[in-house]
Image 1 (cartoon, rainbow, N blue to C red):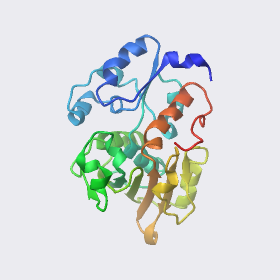
Image 2 (image 1 turned 135 degrees about the vertical axis):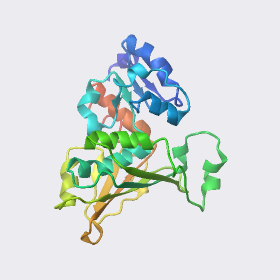
Image 3 (image 1 turned 30 degrees about the vertical axis):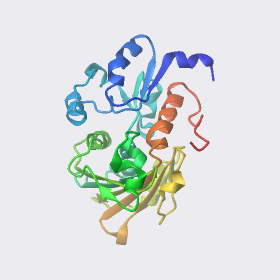
Length: 279
């Protein structure tokens, strides 16, 4: 890897509200930017302000920013100047729903995402409620009436569907250090055929999505430290409901690993570079 690449790429790992104050100047100087915060994930500046409690500092850059989910936007990422790395919940939910929405098999107005996260999903802030000693031996929902990842997920699903979606998203805090487990529900609108084959074909060429064998139930510990989203699809009783189980490590595929995956695509490196060893 050439030593000079660090001179023209900047990766932001700061709290929300920092990158949008600095990205414009960096871009003007020819530096490509990868941002792990939420500053450029939403294309609507007013929507961003409502959820993050401050005015957006660079609304003129929002339409240029490419949403860094490679499984959806690989070609755009390759040529982008500004990447918005997706959040952890949004990554697990969108990858789970993607094949079903692309195939037009489920009602986009009746989507339910029941999601669980380890305590590291709350960041490094010293909050008593997110200390593992406090979270241990308990589980709770939070943000049930509205969570800041909701508009990000809805925007991504709308991009897939090309129409408005109706999403109920309820996150939960679980007594583990790292990991995301999303149980996703959809109502079938047509004969789905072989759902297992649908998922396997959609992700056949994706190096960081693993579709498990039929009947599987992925565990968060199976993705600990790796940049992989592991999926399983079920149709209980061959009824009208399809259930997708999606697990990732929120610190890797849900954060830094996905940023490296984007960097590899932007600079023409092998997509696996730096991502084959556990984090």
